[in-house]
Amino acid sequence: MDSSALKTALAYHDAWTGKDFERAMTYIADDIVCDAPAGRIEGAAAYRAFMGPFVEILVHAEMIAAYGDDETALLMYDTETIPVKRAPGAECVTVKNGKITYSRFLFDRAPFDAARRAAT
Image (cartoon, rainbow, N blue to C red; front, side, top):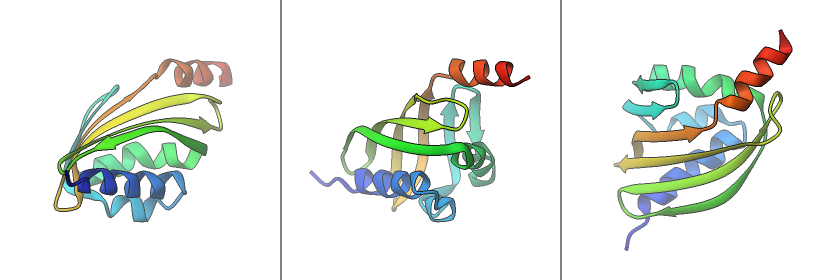
């Protein structure tokens, strides 16, 4: 089975976790739709506004598992950020023509909300 979606998802993940957000965005379709804990995000500009601040506070990321085929990939990883030491996340993405067109992004917002409250 072709794993082109997995290759694209891993390239995207490697770029943003390597702090090369501009390269990461080259894997995002202009009309991406992302369903995240905060709600639906539509379009590359909105996605950039969503992910950009997270990349800025990212310290480290470690891949837990990655699976995929020709259209869909699932990545699960653990991240360390400036305010939160352990923040696991997962993304299930749809890829068409080498671009991520849909992302179902899951992560626990509670540690980030607690860190914000503690900082004020």
